[in-house]
Length: 410
Ligand code: SAH
Ligand code: SF4
Image 1 (cartoon, rainbow, N blue to C red):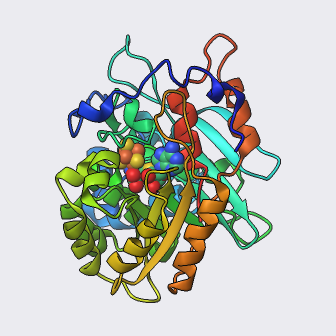
Image 2: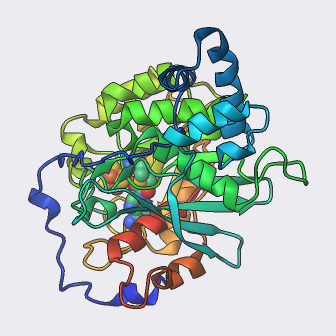
């Protein structure tokens, strides 16, 4: 497999030291909201509170909330001025105290296969701290367009095959920063409701960017409820997939409180190996994880749970693993996604050989599962992504890795 040129360096000089790392890192809650906060990411109830703050009388508030909701989330207005159905006086009051800003786009790259990537800068808590950055990737296919969204800057967990896990900085994104990723993509793709060509470009959302969404549960829930609201952004819950490494207590809550499709990063069929690959398994072992999947509200043959399985050469890719995988998932309405491992400098793993991936896939197929192999997209963006930053500040290896993890979808 060929990856970006910069990946081939220093593979043995920076050993992966995470075997003894603590199970979880503590998120740095250093986010300081801007002096003039954005209304992006607020629920109807929160919008109503803000309207009360600027002195809008109760009888008018509901109507104003409806208007704001429509302008912000349905039309994608990026200033109060555009909101022509709102009185001039109210618009002026709103503009004095608030904005409808989204995260700042610092770079955009368009790949020849149509994949687009945006580098977004978010406020950090401290002037001396590096700005917090995430990337958001859009992957067009013939019958759909998928946007890969992040839930955190970095990740509190330490999966040994994942480069995001090596990042020390961790901060939870706010609902506005999560919804804001979808809004930025709609802006840049000219994909709001009133676009000329009718159909929408972004039809699906996957929470598969940086971070563990179920360790930022409330913000992810609030954001996804806004994204799914059919009077606004309107991407149905069936077209939103949340991927988790297995935060068991929040899996059922995901079904009950958000109602989106679920993907589980399984990657191993025995606890001993999963403890190593996904150390969170020591807290929530495979049997508990699969029980939560059996109990997942709304799972059915029409709404299957996706099990992600990264193919690591000589580690989890034997036909015995495939046999155990099929056995484990018996009785769960499941799909299996095999993901070729994306190597990064210093990793101890290699991607399985292609013929082994095919054999594994065939075994699973013969057992009755469709087993598409997810292929990384936007390779040329990834290879060239160093160009996103200035000449002097090259993209770090972890950022490249996060990008690749994000550039994969069904
Ligand atoms: N934290 C969540 C979602 C983000 S990771 C989770 O772990 O599910 C999205 C997917 O990319 C996960 O299935 C993850 O296991 C996978 N992934 C991470 N690093 C990878 C790599 N180097 N190669 C292939 N897949 C990787
Ligand atoms: Fe975090 Fe997911 Fe990477 Fe694990 S695979 S470190 S949970 S982003």
